Image (cartoon, rainbow, N blue to C red; front, top):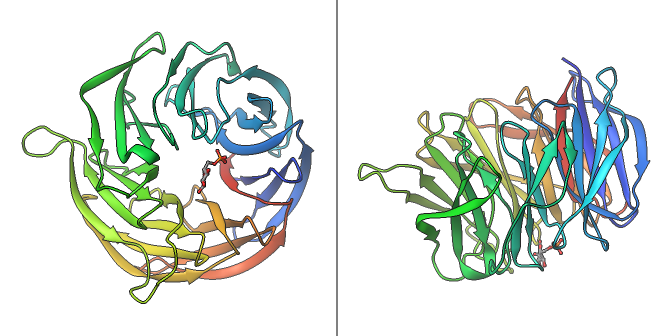
Length: 331
Ligand SMILES: O=C1O[C@H](COP(=O)(O)O)[C@@H](O)[C@H](O)[C@H]1O
């Protein structure tokens, strides 16, 4: 399996394409100049396309991914209704979701044979909308509205329309600031990192009363940390055993182990990383974590080690300016 890492650097308007070898070394394969500040990235479920959200003209841009070496070639683009803070797709690759923090909205773009078309749905009134996350069964879109301390729940219709569920939302504690989410591979639990209070919530998708419920809140900061909490990203290994979160003030990656069923997180430690880590990701073998330093202009590769999932740095690489997004593809 050949793995390719894509990093987005909005300040220099570039996507860097790297090959990740089995020893954790990165080799630069391509630098793509993007017409705009490129931020969120996502790979299509069939691995044939890379999508990026750009600004100041709010658009999603699509590239074909070469099946030989992962390099990119232009495929198409389409307008978005707000500045793209986060993009994702449904599991079938029919729809692309865009959460806009400044636009306070989530939108749905149809993907026709991988190419983005005109937006078919916009839901407004989501203050500080920070991501859109489709559930493992492809039915429910979880949309954290950071400034409202709530995660809105929508049913994804066949047409791409979003219907508010009953209940239409779950709420966090006041001032938490729900931001990014991942799902446990077992499909029964979700995790949400809260930007403003530096915690991670574990959400049971269906508790004994058939309700969505928060079953754990865990602090992601060292006990002696006194600065302003500024959490950003969250990822889980493909086997569901290790969960990682990052905080930008302290430039730390927080390491958790996950219980077998996904219901309980345990803090294992902290890894100092690149300055102001806003985005990171885990490779598809679950062996490496790649973190981007928005202020160091470097990315670092860590090996995930042992039962605790502690991190050992394997190398760091200069990338574009202000890198903030990392995705990994398998060819
Ligand atoms: O990380 C953050 O994101 C929001 C929105 O970011 P943007 O990239 O869509 O402009 C930002 O305003 C917030 O302060 C920051 O913590």
